[in-house]
Length: 123
Image (cartoon, rainbow, N blue to C red; front, top):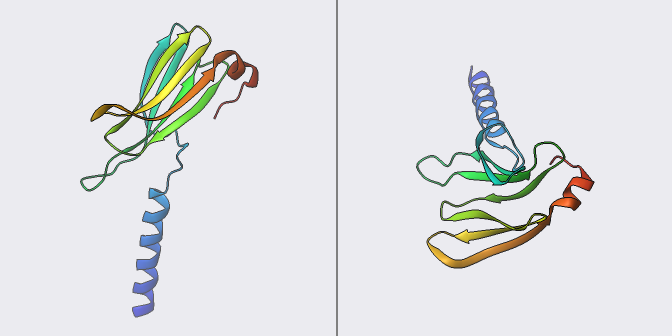
């Protein structure tokens, strides 16, 4: 009887652990799609919900919905946010801000749209 209980408890705990381990590339929970330019968007997906004790985790993708979808990054904390700025029709600047201090840029990345279209990858 004791072995059956122990085995059942291990199976239940293991199933919760497996269910809560989503990849940062998971696209199960689409939150929103926002427009950067006429045919350029960024998509936001929630990876994990932190509940009452932690913050939610989100992954961002830059896409034109036809030729490419590029993984931009993961936002782990509620006080961080990715911003997208179109420099010209071919270059997008993505920068991560601390939203409590807008002068605090945590990371910058530049994406060239023509190169992303040539690669044709869907992350």
